[in-house]
Image (cartoon, rainbow, N blue to C red; front, side):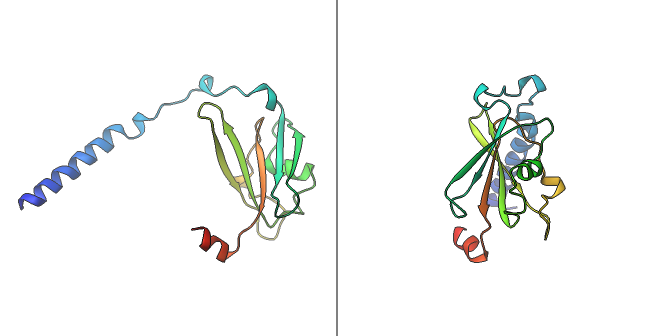
Length: 143
């Protein structure tokens, strides 16, 4: 091995060692007691925001029922059939990080039903965002 290859190999081994020792162990495990407490303002409500491309920015607020899913929320507000070709995103606030977790929800092809594996249970304060689907050219321009 040449001197250059020896240095490169040492650097690669050092990087592998660092990655293996800090991998998943460096992530803090959250216990059930450590999960964030919901704010009082969002208690037992969720909202559905319809993008302005469809209509004037419309925000509907609904009362959260036990075990309610995205599909049930859309049906309760009579939006499932109307927006079945739309892009649905569930926006869930994460209090401890001050960020929002985005979860995509896609409809089954040809049906006004959200795919089973993406029909998430709603939590207090969740927001369902309804936007028109982008065509191929719009996706290409965005990237």
